[in-house]
Image (cartoon, rainbow, N blue to C red):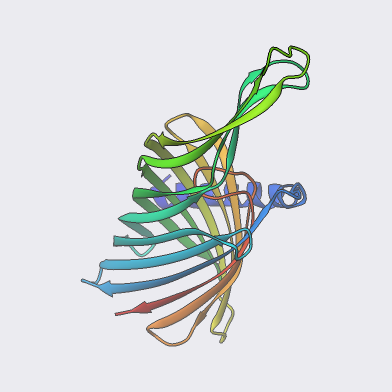
Length: 275
């Protein structure tokens, strides 16, 4: 069995898994799911028949439009080895939002415990990635499977931390008093290595500039061997304005929180053009 046949077989298996699990994942959402807006602009320049340089700027919100979740800029280069196989690699710099986090330090009894609250703050991240994408057509449907390996470095940053403690003031052992102390704390740098497996299906409608698509993407933490950390579902449509310009509108649902985004829903738009 050649490489293309293996990819084709793997894609068809992934389609069956994604279609089976999608209803369960969406129906399992809850009131804590977040909502955001994702927007991006992409520019590309052909360096040769097989090599293309890409630039991308992205802006995301969380909690509706109240909070900027991410601002990022990236550069990439891609190589089309065959008509059905493409490789790419790139770098992304991002400024991201870290939400408030609560950590329990000590449980005193059923009614009293000591805890810390890390206040919401922003962090800077740098990401390197490399991908392989295989694709094939079945009738007017295009199936593609992308395997992306990414490494993310989160810079150390200072953030305010509220520390809540129960203390016995004035020798009254029956009525402890809760005290609060706020201090600046240095948050250590972090590393994150993730494998992202994304299956996409596009429908090429005859004599129509609109191309609908659906995708499912599986996130797996490689450094901690956490399989199936998160699944991201996306549905939308691409519209080709002309040979050099296109836009895409989409809806996203992801089923779990991680270091990048909260669980929940997003709608978005992207604009792409060739230089």
